[in-house]
Amino acid sequence: MKQLNIGIIGAGRIGKIHAENLIRHPQARVVAISDLFAGPELNEWAAKRGIPAVTNDSLDILDNPDIDAVFICSSTDTHVPLIKSAAERGKHIFCEKPVSMDLQQTEEAIEAVRRAGVQLQVGFNRRFDHNFKRVREHVRSGAIGDTHLIKITSRDPEPPPEAYIKVSGGIFMDMMIHDFDMARFLSGSEVEEVYAQGSVLIDPVFAAYEDVDTAIVTLRFVSGALGVIDCSRKAAYGYDQRVEAFGSLGSSKAENDYPNTAVLTTAGGVQSDKPLHFFLERYSAAYIEETEQFINCLLHGEKVPVNGQDGWQAERIARAAKLSLREGRPIKLSELETSIEGL
Image (cartoon, rainbow, N blue to C red; front, side, top):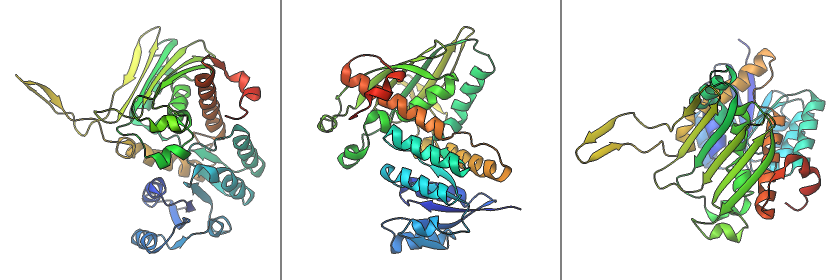
């Protein structure tokens, strides 16, 4: 049985999630993991999982000729140089979103991948969620007719800490970029115009970094369909992730996932559990599925399901949303080539 040797760059929360999923794949072997702050704790963690090498230098992974592919799970500012370096060495790449916070840099990374003839998959894990995939199937099969509206609700249970807000790139690039990709995924159409509105209603710390914590973005697709995304950094009742595709023949929607489906009904009211707490619980199966598809595509010489172009398109929408909020008007994506200076 053919096996792929994998190296992981970045051993934070998401890097460890990918490592756990990879070691369960019968045709993947994690041979090394790197992190700038690698120490005894990471060494112990890796040893318990049969990962033979731990290093604080990503070059130890990139220069290892036995490694076929790398998972880039480090901070966003490192993604582009790591993608370029991995591509130059002929290694396939899985990179967490966003590829970068600069469209030109993302284009350079994609070009490096193209020149090298390797594959790049971007970590838009929500595409692999069982609920959202079914909605997409209903759209593609024509079950809802011509798509007229895409509605997405995305609300976190708690806002991130200030240290994260400072470097996040803002709500559109950090949080809503998943929703921008989901809008493209569900509709099957590109976005041509974006209009964003936002407020600081949860914590004034967001304003200190010229960010918002509550936002609504409307989209116009090339197909003529419309999209609406509402987003909040804090929902008192937990993680809220819902989508709906509405068309000429009907609609398809996906509600939240819950720890169980039991509902208690009494004279005092109706009670059920809150939604699954956060993204690691809500999308645990989706993380496994995206990893499996990446490995299987490489093993069988197939195209990865979410490529660099998908990452670039989502970043364009995020940039347009940021510009729209700043200027208070709809932004056509065709404007970005001359309008992204200083964003």
